[in-house]
Length: 338
Ligand code: NAD
Ligand code: MG
Image 1 (cartoon, helix red, strand yellow):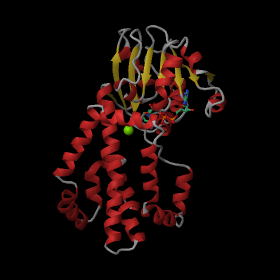
Image 2: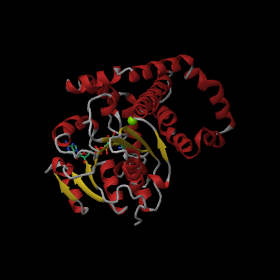
Image 3: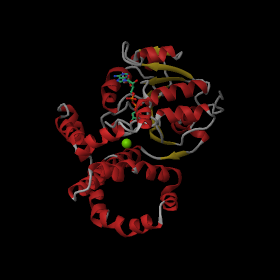
């Protein structure tokens, strides 16, 4: 394992709170970079034994925070405000750094950090498993970084040193701010990645089935084959997709794509973005969470009961390579946004 040559955190104690997707990958990479890491978890919580078994010094969050020069908050976003008030705020050293991997709680003021600490963000552009795997083979996953509050004069250096420690510096570091990271992240998952894509697939499926085509055929055409297209996007952008599909598919793309996603769709995307920017979305989501997720549960149930799920389960049972993938996912959930 290589040791980071970045000196900024060389003498620092780093507390990583949470040992899930990001927490585990960060803790392992930082340690392998020669940095001093303690993992903060609830005793008896699901990750305590795992972090111990992987050789970490594990402590309750409050204890891990005490004496730390940098505290990385890598628990689910919705538990971060309580964790901050109970364990971090009373214990973090003046001049220490508080680090997030997503800006939601700071940007939307669910956490208002003490005035005597640095507040920074380092977010790898990939799931924890990839952050770890790339590091182990001597590479890294690009990271975006930001400074919200700088009391030590070292906030930027600390963010970059942390990004180096998890391997991001081997790839690419991009400067952002908490507002940009939070708003673009929410917009991406709502308009395109999760909301946009799933609604597009359901509408395409319904259109074919309502026109009398078999649901099995519709499933393959509008859901299953999407993976091949997304893989091409991922590897080489839209240009690579155009290289690999037939001329007929390309012509259909050019003339019909803009009929489905048109200027009116883009106007509605702008409205989604405006709700994110002015805090409407955050306010609604926090209220929904506090109320025990009544609408969330209803929406989820409707998605799970959509006919595409029934036909999909039946078809996937006949594609054994998919069961292997489902048992050992190659992809992890996007950040569980709070
Ligand atoms: P996760 O759900 O995989 O892991 C959360 C961890 O926190 C678990 O170890 C859990 O046991 C622990 N935990 C839960 N409640 C706790 C508490 N009260 N005190 C201490 N520990 C507690 O979370 P994740 O997906 O790694 O997300 C962590 C942060 O990283 C979030 O801010 C998320 O937005 C951000 N992020 C995630 C990804 C991703 O790909 N998953 C990517 C970029 C940023
Ligand atoms: Mg997101």
